[in-house]
Structure formats: structure tokens, C-alpha cells
Length: 497
Ligand SMILES: C[S@@+](CC[C@H](N)C(=O)[O-])C[C@H]1O[C@@H](n2cnc3c(N)ncnc32)[C@H](O)[C@@H]1O
Image 1 (cartoon, rainbow, N blue to C red):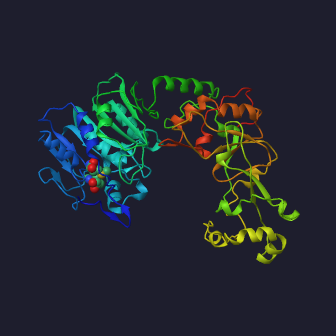
Image 2 (image 1 turned 90 degrees about the vertical axis):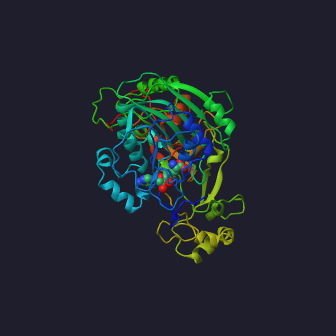
Image 3 (image 1 turned 60 degrees about the horizontal axis):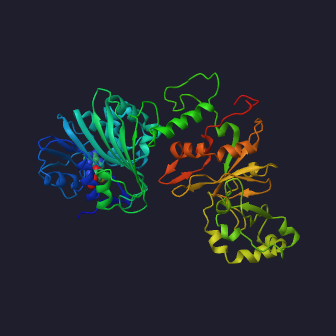
């Protein structure tokens, strides 16, 4: 078996080859006959082609840019699918297109796109290489033709794939989607994956999309795939039917009931008397958000937590005691409250090591064993003495004399259906694994109401579907938290924002 070509450790053509059991499953989704015309636009090591051939299909065309790979010479044309002018239509287009972000694209591939009419019409440099494979494939489908692809999930939700999604809604409908979430499929690529089957038709089809979700953190087996194929019940798999996707929307892989509940929640949070400004705005109806209500900041960065943590503070001198920062770690957060406080050394404005040693002798001794590692910390292009934290971001915000809400920066939701927003007293600080929220000055709502809302099931469902979710991990950095809809109780923002 040929190895993918990695140039400077970069997988320049986006080569992740599809396992046989996935290929078998994808081919089984097709309803074509043996004489139908089939295209594999980026055939890699020919796993789809060889399987199709074995299953009796003959009318196959394939493209593969990389001549170094093993080729089934009966079918493969060693040219770029993106630029080749193809004057034929196909009944089935099947495969696993290369997904490469623009910034990681080799110049040779960028140049192809720069002069590409379809790319220019629909995409830009924030789009992924795979989008052109999806769009051009749809262009090449016969009426009623089938597109069956395996891709990462993210284009269903991102802003920059909106034009692709709209194009797809205008031209076709989905018959089915299989969502694997974190289930490992490709070696060396941990990405949430979908397989979709999609039919080209100008006639709107209002039948539901059959959605299978298999969420297991375990390698797939033939048995699991066969169960999914036959819609048999098994652990970690659920089967749903959901409405066809709509234009100008994110596409959520969730039940219509939950989507309806999320809409009700958003409607409760709508800003009254709003004027719609942009068609491309995904929040076509704008709602109040946590970002309107709270200042949000990610926690302080020491660069080496274990060096700054100090467990016994009884023996410290008075000067040292004044330089203890009381910190709440993500692991100690619970919904509504917290369990533990960790003491951190927090020094600043010390002239040199001599002054450090004289004024903070216990700290000096404490740091000796960590000194080497502290000097190797990432220092944000600044000179930072080993006894200082590397990045005191948002320190002014955290020093406010008021209650705050903390949440872990990341939360795994495979085994839980709640988040851990906790109420924290004024003199406690977050480190980098925690994000903190502070009520804005012009807001009248109480922090207890904000806390209760954030811990509500509606917010859990909303963020699990609309937030930044990678596999089963929900991210709580400033941006996703800001976007959470917020229902005003009192109509209470005094100033305009
Ligand atoms: C994700 S791999 C999948 C390969 C194969 N379809 C499979 O499923 O195992 C994508 C393939 O696309 C090829 N490729 C990248 N750019 C291409 C282009 N412009 N035209 C044709 N093939 C391309 C890569 O070399 C790679 O083999």
C-alpha cells in the first residue's frame, strides 16, 4: 500500500483514505443499476473504484491528482478534478473529497482556485477545498442523480459555507445522513464525520431526511455498520427523521422537536422592533445574547500551573501572604457552585532576582525546582522573569469587586446533560481552563437570574446544537458564550448597545 505524500509534514493533498467497511456502507446506500455512470472525483488508492468494480459496476470515471499513488488504470485519470473540463453527467458521484482549509492549501492548488469560475461565484479564501468538490459534483449529476460523500461535519454550520448550503437547498434534497460524531474513522484525523446521500432534483421533495447518529468513542466494526445499514437497534446508535434543510440557516443534526424548542427559546429572547440588516446574517431575527449582558474573559495564564500553586501558606511571611491569588480551577466547578480553592503565587513589579530572593524567600525556594521549566515557557514575545505569570489577560476585569460566573473552557457532554456555570465570590480568579462572566454595568438583571438561565436545559440544548462543538466537547470561549440567547425579564438594558 502506498503511503500518503507528506511534504514538510504536511498532507498536501488532504489524503485520508476511506476504510473498506465505510466504502461498503456508502455503496450500499446507492440505488443505481450496474450500467449507470459513476464518478469518483478524488480516488486516492481506488478503494471505492475497486469495490464498485468488484460489485459489477463498469461505467466508472475517476480523477486523482497524485500520480504517486497506486492507480486502477482502467478508470483513473491523473488530472485535477477541480480544473478538468468534464462534459459528461453521472448517475452516481461517490467518494471522500480532500478537505483542506485555504490557509493550508499548497500554492499549486490555490492557483487553480483563483481562476476558477465556480469557486469565485460561491466561495472565498475562508472556505474549504472540499466545497468545490461538493458543488462541482452536483453540477455534474444527472437529474435524479445521487451524490454520496463522506466529509467532516463542520460545513453544515459555518458561516462561510452558507453559499454552498444554499446552493444545495436550491438544487437537491437529502435522502439520508449518517453522523459519526467522535467515532474514530480515519487514522490521524480526529474530526466529526458525516456520510450524506443527496439527490439532484429541481422538484422540491418534502420527505424527511433519514438521520442515523452513531456516537461511540470506539472503532467501527462491520457488525455496527451493518446494523446501521439495516436500521437495527444497537447501543450508541439512534435513528431519526428530520425536516429537509432550509436556506440561510445552519443545518442542525437534531430532532425536529428539539429544533422547535430551540426556536421557542430564541423567540422568547427576540429584540423587539428590530430592523433586519443583512440577508447573510444567520441571526435573521436577532435576539438578545449573553454577550449583550455580560463581559466575558478567558482566565489568566501562568505558563506552568504546578510551579505557581502553593499548598501550604501557613509558613509564608506577611509580604508573601499578600501575593497569594485564590484561584478556582475548572475541575472544581459544579453547576451553581464550586468545591475547592487553589492558592497561586502571584508576583509582579519585582526589579531583579536579588529583590525576589530577599523579599520572598519561601517563594524563591519553592521556585528552585521549576526554574528551568519556567524559563522555557511560551512568553508571548516578551521578556518575563521566571516568577511572573506569562499572560495576565483580563486581570482588570477579574479584579472587579463583584460576584462573577465561572464555567470550564471546555466541557465533555458524552455522559452529561448539563453545563457547570458556577457563582463565584469577588476575590476569586480564573486560570486559563476557566472562562469568567461579569454582568455589564448597564444591566439591571440579577446575576442569580443570569446564572439560573445559563444552567437551564434550554441553554444546554441550544449550545450543544449551535455552539462550538468538536466531537462531544463543547467550547466555552468568549465567542460561543456571547452568542447564547438571553431572555430579558425586565427590559433592563439602560443604554443602547
Ligand atoms: C480524502 S482523500 C480520499 C481518497 C479516496 N477517495 C478514499 O476515499 O480513500 C482525497 C484524495 O483527493 C486527492 N486530490 C486532492 N486534490 C485533488 C484534485 N484537485 N483532483 C483530484 N484529486 C485530488 C488526494 O490526492 C487524495 O487522494
